[in-house]
Every structure is written in C-alpha cells, then in structure tokens.
Length: 120
Image 1 (cartoon, helix red, strand yellow):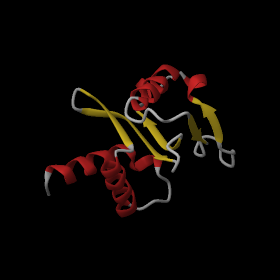
Image 2 (cartoon, rainbow, N blue to C red):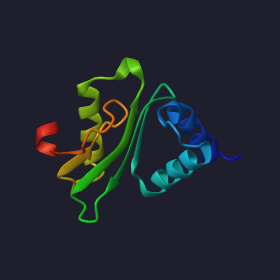
Image 3 (cartoon, rainbow, N blue to C red):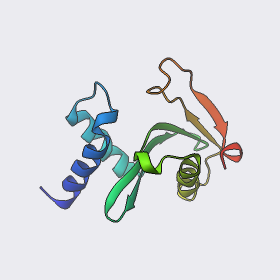
C-alpha cells in the first residue's frame, strides 16, 4: 500500500464511526474523490487528525454544500467551526453561502442556507 492509501486509511479510521450505514469501500471512495477535487479539509495536530470537513461546490461556485464535519470531541466549538470556514474560504473565494443540515444530530431537519458574512 502506498502513502496515499495509508492516508486514506487514516482518514477512514477517524470518520468511520460517524457514517452510519455506509460501508468501508464507499467511504474510502468518497474520501479519494474529495481529495482529488480538493473539497476535503483535514486538520492535523502533532501528526494526528483532529477534524475533517467535506463539501461540494455548486456549479455557480457560490454555495458550499457541507456534507459532513467531524471534529475530535475536545476541539469542538463554534470558534473551531469558524476557523474551518475561514480556512476554506481562502481556497474557494467565490463562496457566498454555506448549505448544511446536521442530520445526525437532528434527524429530519431541513437544510439551512447561511450567508458567509453571518458565519464569520
């Protein structure tokens, strides 16, 4: 296995408990696609993953649809989420809105569309 596959395995180990009903092959395939397109943010601390966020960008480039955010428990805070948003706005400066739902915490909840200005 090469270093790329080892990193995919490391990401998988970090997120696997949050993807209820998904199989390992599908999760790893999605990780690889998001790595390829640059739509995954992996935050490391001392060579250890502490957070991962995945999103899709709308065809207009103005909306980032957040698919999931997994943050190690001791780092979870509103400030950390703002840090993730700001960090990725540098990579995707055309984004004006973020769309998200938090289905795991609030099953059946409708998606929200929030202006970047409101988040940061």
